[in-house]
Image 1 (cartoon, rainbow, N blue to C red):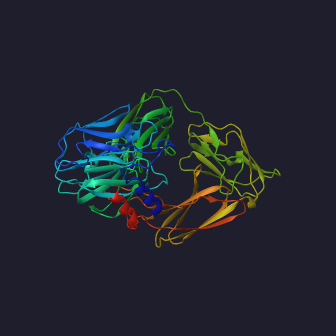
Image 2: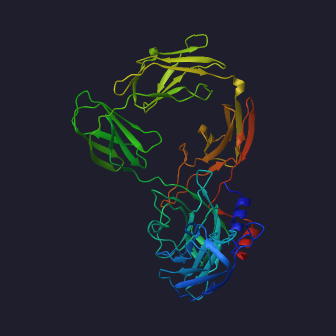
Length: 547
């Protein structure tokens, strides 16, 4: 979320060709360009070499990251000096320039003086191959569509919408204009000609100004951007869901084949075509938090396995050569620590799917050695066994998992496991009540989370605007709300070609510090962030234009 104050300050800080004074008391003055050949803002430009002369020795700092040439060139220019200080910067253009086009070499903050490192902030050299220099501009901010933090050095691109424009250009053609947020969240793109443009931002993995959906994040303004404009734009970066693609399966161990994939693999069917004995059995589950399908099977004598995989529009045959003799042994790990909080359910995670549970061989006792009734649950992946039981506050429990309590997919069983658990007094916990306002008739997903643990509790609502989170461990929490526009109970990303924006996510601006036996009441007023920020202060725009 970005306030107008942040937007105004960010835009103003990047507008001047002359940097703010920095450095020690001996020398806090930035270097100054005294002459340029050809002259700054030359017209009918036809030179291949440029010389920029300064009043003192200068050098480059992070030139490769800071330098932005707009429109972008196909071949990089040779810029000197490299690694040394000089009073002259030379640029040799290695590309053919377009006719009637204004070019800007924006050095960002890369030029510093040799002695104190005072930077020449937002310095640029501008020229035109035509009869005049284009002087229009556009500005705005870039945020991440889901996360609070956004990466730096985000490229902001403009494609002129003319008779030859198609949305596919963002995948295969460089833009007509480009700038970067550098180490800020704001952008300021200058020396643009009048026209209508598609505005796009890229978290550009290859720095080639081409959108690669597998690697890059993208943001876009849905409607054409008409320049000149006194609007400021808000671009929200997101990663698209790639089309489903199945990778070649690999043997992970005896009795286990892994199928890697991209995109959404549900529904999927994996059928074994190799002739197997009558006792053969198999099971498929998804690897937790990875794009992997696990195919578990009871081993039999064969050198290879052939599979038919059917998913959506895919129907493919794969053959896997069997070479390993290693088989994993059953291991179990407790999900929670010794203290069992009210929102915790004691569970054991298994590295191999569990085939059966014998509750008679699992015993739970309280501090008086009285046996406590419980109900075991096995999740759909068969890799997590949860024990549900009625817990008392300020109680100690002893859990014994005796041998042969659990039988895994291959028929192996567990050794003896012993866990000591305790619960705390009810007054050791607190509650958070959050009143959400501003989005009537919108389905909401409210999430209470922490940086370390992720989402702690999630609540859904189609009508109510008050969310109550009870029996919380005292610590610092964060809160966010997702505007669930399609009411499917999850956050949905966007798609550039379909012109779908990601669903809005709102972060409560302060951390919530909760103490034991406390109830914190907060009010959160939400406002949708349109692609165009209409209410940017006019004085900030005036300041940008004057600089």
